[in-house]
Amino acid sequence: MRNTRQRLTSATNGGPARFLAIFGVAAVALAIWFLAHQGLPWKLWSGDACEYAEMGRRLATGEGFTTGVIYPAELRFGAGLDKPAVMRPPAWPVALAAVFTITGPTETAAHALTGALFAGTAALTAALGTALGGPLVGVFAGIALITTPAFLGLAMDPVSETPFAFLVTLAFLLFVRGRPAFAIGLVCGAAYLTRYNGLLLLPVFAVGLWWPAPRSLRPALLCCAGFAFVAVPWWIRNLLVSGDPFYSLLQLNLHFSPHLTDLHDSLYYVLEPDFDSKIAMHPLTKFSKQLPSLLAGWPLASLNLAACAGLLLASVRGHAAALALVALALGTTFAVALGLPQGRYFVPLLPATLALGAYGWQRYGSRLATPGLALILLLPWLPSFPAPRDDLAMLTGYFDVERHALREDPERAARERARYEGLRRCLPDRPLVLAQGAARLVWETGAIAIYAPNHPTDFWKIVDRYSIDYVQMERWRKIDRKRFERGFEPFDDCAADLYRRR
Image 1 (cartoon, rainbow, N blue to C red):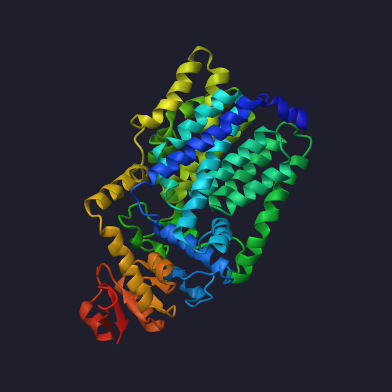
Image 2: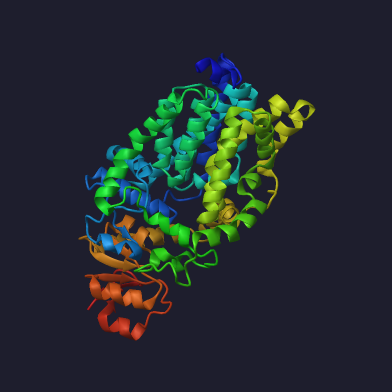
């Protein structure tokens, strides 16, 4: 089996050049990541980052897989200190918890881990390119990765895309290097527990391991065994918590209407989700509406069209790893079309795409090899074609806007710190808060916060059913202020948008 696998790949180049390529790319990646943080505070920028960090903090302090960030749609699981986490997968919070145990639960520590994984993914990309086509291919792929704005942008916030990219790239490197099938399965399982769409890795690599020797199912079964070794404990936990081993609140993504203008109008923020309501849509109907536009502006192509062309070239020539990546990319496309059609879900596939795409041009490009490699290196600096999806376009410029705003208003960061210091003083005993900014409030204060629903009927049901101590309101939307003021009074000494029960 090992000999068969080795014939499917290029010989790995050894010697100092290989290590210089890998570690050189990693060092440049770390320098670029640090430079990108200049002029920015080391803070958690998104609600997702706050949710992951809160889970990590609770794990580090011995509270288990619980969370203080609660969506109305999951209130059936309770709203107390022991509320189980049933939305996010566990691997990234576990990694954060490991660091928090050493450093304490700080935002800087979460960023440091993300930066290490950013550099590590760049190193793995260079290693994959080097294993396929030599150090030059590795360097081209690695440098193209760390200069791609979307990949760097995601690594500026401690969210799960960067560790997921690390694991996806590691799985392809193990596959190319002919490593044991059980080890590949372990990495696939870890990727699945980082982002649930990592489940697609299992069939891709199981088939890839079986295909060269179809008379033996042993490699595919070992890959499945490695996956199960990692995933089964989480399935058992979910079974005990929810009655469904595969349960996640993220399943609601399948029913989100593609016409939503604000994510807070989604089913997450509905007390009792109704799949026949105006804000829901049948998954197959969504799929038929979203797939054509997703294919027309395929996000992976917008990230680096030349790398996609090189990958296609290698797959047409029957390269096993290229075929596996094409299958993974297509599976991701169909899965995204069923859920939220965001371009960021394709970014973790970019490292392997760059390495295999560069190899495809070098190995099969003939006279076009040099222009193909040059384009892979240059495209991160040029306008994207096809045009990037809105979330990718916003991601690439978001931190430049924040940096400019901080330069224009140097006191802005200090005001924000003072605001949350005041909230921590006013909310010392982990009260129950109904909040529009729930994730940030929980991370900053340790409170338990239910996201405020958009519909006023659900708002008043939550207020009446649960012992809500405080309400944090940034936007009033459709909430009757006179009715609200009969039950809650401003807590101006703490924050302008915080109200406490009368």
